[in-house]
Length: 196
Image (cartoon, rainbow, N blue to C red; front, side, top):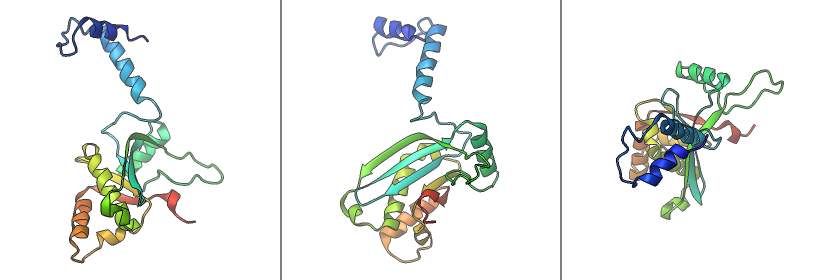
């Protein structure tokens, strides 16, 4: 489909002009929807859907930290897996496929991603605190996806259990513990990082 109706609107009007119903025709609406679908149907990034859980995967090293926000793909296997998870079942995503190929693996599709370089003292952090800071940063960056619903944080550091059970008086660790425990997320370990 061509985007000619949109081009006509932008060529005949200034950028700050109000778009009136006379200008916004059915053809312009169809062209607009085509552009949006073309952008969000790419395998790199998908459209957010509030009906499904949000998964955020984080990683940390002394050079930097990153996150990837994901939701299940819209195939029947993934939809069935997310419904079982939302009803209290176990997480079936990011599992190893069976050797005999007995069933299909549910898939997650990326919605957003980000990374940043570690600054100052962050370059000196050990992995468990670094993963916690990466999670805090990633969850904070994606807060508009997380607000008001349960979500899942996938991390490759099991030592976050230490942070959640910390009862010392170190101020920065206590603040980080408080921020993470205030978030409504399930924390699971990334299966791909486990030593088998």
